Length: 116
Image (cartoon, rainbow, N blue to C red; front, top):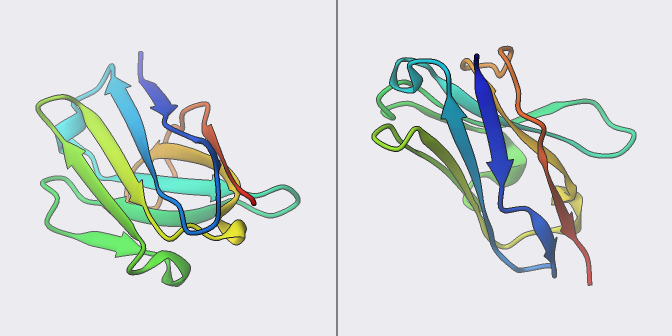
């Protein structure tokens, strides 16, 4: 059974940093591209960042370029999203998802709230 469990969200002030983690199990993690997507209240799901199998190809949506860094540890079956210089508009539920476009199975999400 595929399982994706996100953690690391929380309340942070604007300009702050967080590291999101996603623990994967039930599939060959190293063989899959992985994606972080987010959904803010009242808005549609947004693809934030993707990393291919092997980690050689990365994608970031324009609004997070230079602030967020995606990475993976295939030995630990873990996906990460390092977020810095957080803005109020980054407030959302963040999910890790399988596949390059995030179209595969998603986890339950971790809430990120950026507020002073």
